[in-house]
Image (cartoon, rainbow, N blue to C red; front, top):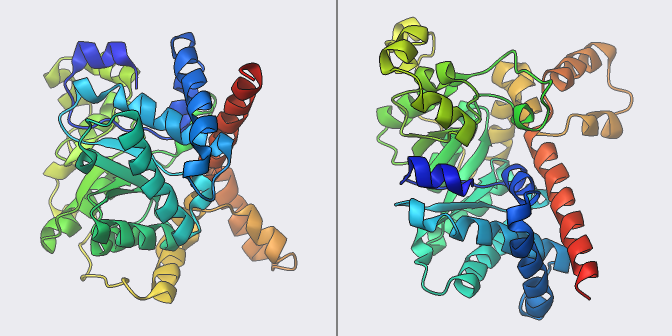
Length: 343
């Protein structure tokens, strides 16, 4: 959402956003007025919307405004993420998505709302929200994808995109963190699975941090690239990047070690989905999605071997939804402070 980069390197296909991106952008001086306008509009429009606080509404408006500003530099969709605190409520996720579409109509009446794509975390509840929204004509992106099982259900419910995370989202909020287990191969596996069964959902590789990772997933339908990495790529010769890391898409299925499984069917099988997610990599990838500390709260007498395994999960990665929730709280605090200043 850096406009100078968009002007220099655009146009692009789509523009993404989430609470981490928005929090970073709204700390810039250039967005002071946008934040103030969002706070004023939230106070004025609050009575038009149900089940939302004025601070939450201000954050939604800010996300919409940031996205609308990028429209001249894109050809496709603006991607706006729901409040991550709704990740485990199908109803609240649907309400939030519909509110975002309504806010786009309020903020930019001339914008074609068929070019809005709502980003929703890939929990069971989130993907069921995608199912309802897609049936109503609102396009969705299933984010925080760490497993093929999540991607399989996302395709079943009709998502336009899935966003597999190559690295933990923590790489963008903690300068000292390095993901020792990136998974660019997941993007390849999901895309080949979709192609095998003629599924129309597209793969959008996310959380790329190096040009080697970009080259590793070259051939994917779409990818999200942050402006600093985009700048680095623009200064790199194609032959240099290719030598550094050839594309994983050039490997055949047998040599890659990622064989395409049979077609999965989780559409109406919540228990099957949750079990498959838990068994994927012995639960490690599920641990990247959810808040593992809940395990200790709910099951204080869990056996020591299991505690050790879950501690390993916890030290490997901070959970994506938890990071987004932290950023959502930061954004709401910013909105609240701005409202106090304009009373």
